[in-house]
Structures are given as C-alpha cells and as structure tokens.
Amino acid sequence: MRVFRAAHLGFCFGVRDALKVVAQVPNPAEVTIRGELVHNPLVLHQLDDRGFHREPETQRDALPATRQVMVTAHGISDRERHRLLAAGKELIDTTCPLVTRVHRAAQQLAQEGRHVIVIGRPGHVEVQGIVEDLPHCTVLAGPHPIPDLPSRFLGVVCQSTTPPRLAAEVVAALRARFPEADLQVVDTICQPTRDRQQAVLDLLPQIDALVVVGGKNSNNTRELARLAQERGVRTLHIEHLAELDPRWFQGVETCGLTAGTSTLDSTVADVEAALRTLVPPPTAEPSISPTPATRSPEECPSLGAA
Image 1 (cartoon, rainbow, N blue to C red):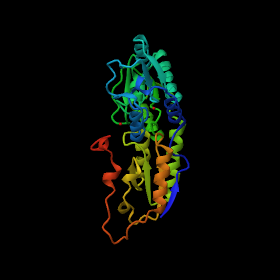
Image 2 (image 1 turned 135 degrees about the horizontal axis):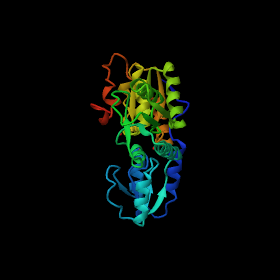
Image 3 (image 1 turned 180 degrees about the vertical axis):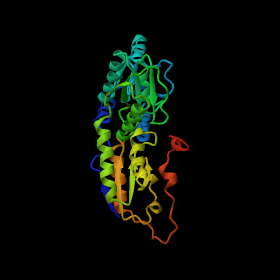
Image 4 (image 1 turned 90 degrees about the vertical axis):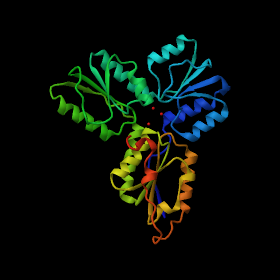
C-alpha cells in the first residue's frame, strides 16, 4: 500500500509554543491548567503524569486552588483574565496570538456599535472566550437557520479554526437574509487551518482512503476528516496508532495521511511507519464498515481546544 503524506499536517506554531512554555514550568504541582492545553489525549496524560492540576473547560466558575493558573492556547476572555488577577492569581498565558486577534477584532466591531456574529461552534472554549467580552452577540454554527437579529448594523468574525467554505456559506446566508444590512466581515480564520485543509483537498484525487490523526474533540481535526467524507473518500479518524486495523484497509492501494494541529509529531511518525508496512487482507475477506471509525461520539447524532 502506497502512503501519501499531506503537504501540511500536525502541530501549528501556536500549539508548539504552548508546549514549549509547559516544558519550562519548574513546579507543575503548583499550576492549574484551565481546561485542555490542547485537544490531544496523549498530551493531557503527559501533563497529568507531570503533576499539573487541570480543570474541565466547562467548569470555570470556581477559582483554582493554586496560585499559578495556565491559560490554554484557546484563550480566555478579558473579563475572566481580570477576575483571576483580582483574586491574586499569577497567569501563565499560552494563548495563540491568532486567537487573540479574533478577540480584538470582535471587540473592535462591538465598539463601532455593531451586533457581532461569531461563526463557530457554540460552547467551544475559544468561542466562549470571545463572546464573554461582548455586550451582545450571536453565535452561528452554520448557515441554517439564520435567526432574526436585533440590529442591521452587523460585524462578523470566525472562530480561528472555522472551515473557510463554512464561513463563506454563513456570510452568504446573512446577506440573503438581511440584504439591507451594513455587514462588516473580518477574516479571522488562521493560516495553519487553511493550509491543512487545502493540503487535504490537494491530496484527495491521489488516494483511495485517508487517515486523519488527532483528538476526537479537536475542531480542526474533525474538519479534515469531514472534508474527505463529504467528497466520498473513505476516511478513518484515529487518535493513536493502536486504533489502526488492517481489515479497514481492505482494497486500499493508495492511502493519504494528515493530522490536526494538536497532534504530536511522534504520533504522526508512528502512524505513518505503520501504514507503510501494513498489508491489508485479501479482498475476498468481508470488509469492515468505516462508519464507526469516522464518527466521534459528539457526531452521533449531531456535531467539541484555539
């Protein structure tokens, strides 16, 4: 079986920088990480082994017990930042600068008096950080339905990992729904997200199947898998090497490989090495349906770490 590696895959600079900061923390037991540093279960296990305290992303009302608090690459709102500082906490900030850019763009639109629309996944930690600083806003996960809005003076930003085609669909739907609106759109989709998605699209004509490596709750990783699935390419989304099953590759002659921005280089290398030596069973053997492997729990029945 031939294996084709996507031109862009794996760690982005924001995640790599965050992990560098973590590696330099001298006393992990004195630090609480607010949520998941990155949406990667292996990395999270490594942090636990080092002794970091971690709080669930959905439980941020209580103040951390430790004096030092680490802000993840997905960022937090200025309001939450001020609350932590006022409580005497020392912040170790690993917010991706491209996420900070989204925050500032949304705040600027709000200062202009616009009703801000955030294109992204409702409840996602990055989206929560953006909207908590806005006096009023609307979060849209997709182009349908477009609700009525309290103003026709509108501003649009995107969660940094939003698929560009989804953002374009939502903006088009907004213009169709409110043709008289004054609509200001700020493109806040990060370049690493664009690069990885375009690399998958470039890869698809060359392959029979695609393996996507990354966290099942990673927004950008799930989108890589979705791009291939929507175009009819057999797709396997795994988090680690142990999930590879030779039976799934029955009949596959050319396989593509990509990975989300929070996937460790070592994990990608292990999966690639295994794929290059993998021998699928004969086509006479009953095939294994790819459906269970390509859908995360959150995608059953509906659609979950900037």
